[in-house]
Image 1: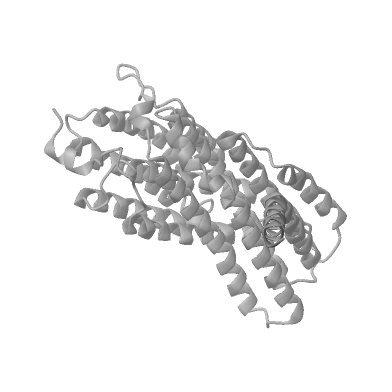
Image 2: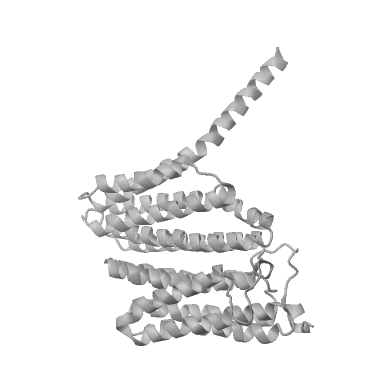
Length: 400
């Protein structure tokens, strides 16, 4: 028999669900986190620096994803849910604050905050769900987070093995979600137990992606403000804005608006699509983060020749486009040719601009993305023109 508290916490699954004010407030922590990550990448553009930033981003993203997924089941007005989201938000802020020095002296802050977020969530939900089938789901998740938490904490304490242990921990956390957290004696969660409201999760993905784009615009604006506002920096700032606008359009149109409907149409197995969309959104946000760093470098010193800026400037949009193409293929089976051509076009453009000033590299990236947007829009444009012509002919026949 489910407790009265469990019944008050849970939302009826058939009711429409919109992101609450509290969820949007929770997202503010990730503005800080993404800004910290871009600072860390800018400070160390080596391969090792890129790996470290990727590990931290993956951990922070998993905090966001698991929280968005679990919050989908609960009434955001319930005091316990409010406390849960504030708990996770504060833990995320601690992780973000430790980002610049995580691999120097504050690894324990980052790791302990990560583990405590997940185990604290379980400590709140498991007693509250007493007697409800979802209590067992929360218990399975908590046990596996406790096991992977050992790798996080040991990795933080043992610097030489840190990257290896944290990679293993992330593989556990991400992989066990796909396997539905199987546990000897307790089985594994069923897809109905993991089912989410498709429109709500789709909206949440869009909101966190907009926050990632907001970080790009914020950092570009701050950098431009301190650049002296000269002609080249102004042009580089304009290119950053064009790039951000193109990324936003490519994300939202058309599959961004169809993801929720596809998840709902799949029924309980739609949880698989939710997870895959979560993995691909991580890749897209990583791409935006790298693009942000490249644009900042171009605004700060447009005439500088820096191979590192070219590398992140090409890798970032290419990562975004690749993940976006895969998401579109999963949602509606589409394979838009402009985006498929766009990935090699970015790589070729990067090779052509080797040795050129940073502003040239940014211009090529912005131009390729803008062309993809234009070619994407061509079918609808031609359809509009045809409809207008047919309407004119109909009017002429009526007039005749």
